[in-house]
Amino acid sequence: MNAINLKNKIKKLIYPYLKLKYRVKSSGWYYIGKRTTIKNKKKVFIGKGTNISPNCMLVPNGKGIKFGENVIIGYCSAIFSSYYVEIEENVICAAFMFIIDSNHGYENVEIPIRKQHYEKDTKDNKVIIGADSWIGAHVTIIGNVRIGKHCVIAAGAVVNRDIPDYCVAAGVPAKVIKKYDFEQKKWVRV
Image (cartoon, rainbow, N blue to C red; front, side, top):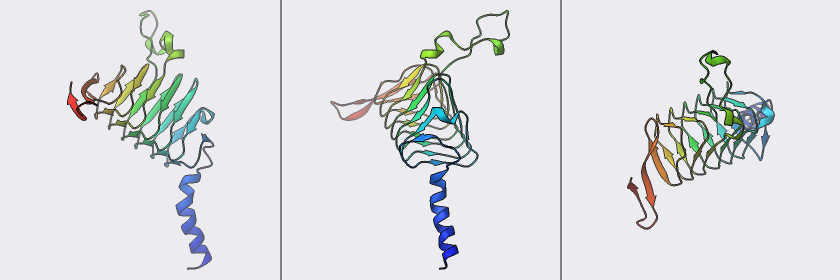
């Protein structure tokens, strides 16, 4: 193997982990897939070992978006923060997930909805997804929501209220359908 082939092999192995063009804050190596858009890069923190798949969109405002270590964000997902979104360590998010921490105002019928501001409490809104959780494909998380530790959110669910730790939630809007019982040491229907 000549030096040029070796250099090309090393480049193919290492280049995806460098992605210096993003210049986001990080605690170590991470991967950002092709055609992923990051607006306002200074407000994104990516933990070590995090993998953001191709064709994703990150649009942070306020305090921004924070990813813990070893997070996986699935293909074509979008995260918008008016104030703050945090995805804690070891969370798996499937493809086509959508997160936004605010809701648009609509109350004044004299003004077109697109010209109305976000909800009054936007500055305190945040979305927190607890460690070790699994967010299914096509899940929408909207508003001021906390998803607990080690939760499963079923594919296609719309989460618009808090989900406690160690729960499985499904539906539109998402409701808890299972909970882990530590005394029985098994998942039980709610």
